[in-house]
Image (cartoon, rainbow, N blue to C red):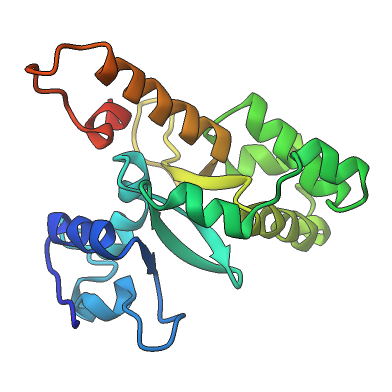
Length: 211
């Protein structure tokens, strides 16, 4: 089936229907956000800009976003997320993999920082990890790819840099959070739903996560 979307809501419908949506063509004969949208809207900074949508899906609780497959950016619906994690991830914890020699030291240190400071942006993360120097940039990026490839972390959104007056100042920065936090948020929402009377209309997980 061929998909063509213009509005953000239509893109949500596609993600919920097929479960996995790469940003760019990745899987043969399979749609991507790039292929189902018009090139003219990319980086247009309008409500129709898929480049803006890519992190909005995450903050709105629609899909997890990160470089999960072949180091490429992919969106995974929250309904499908545990199943994809079981394929891409590991039964062992991050700590167990590190102590067993199956995770790099840099990735382990970065994971611990993200777990302590959920939603931390890229620059702050580099500084706290001691990898701010330009010659350590590849080490930092490699560690992030390592953690995303096993879905230990996901991209939680974009943080805009602002000056003291609250005005946008400089490039926006990608922010990260752990997979465990996403699952905890969803379980918390489900518990709230189960504890409420059935006749009461409860907002969806996407709405809860966006507040």
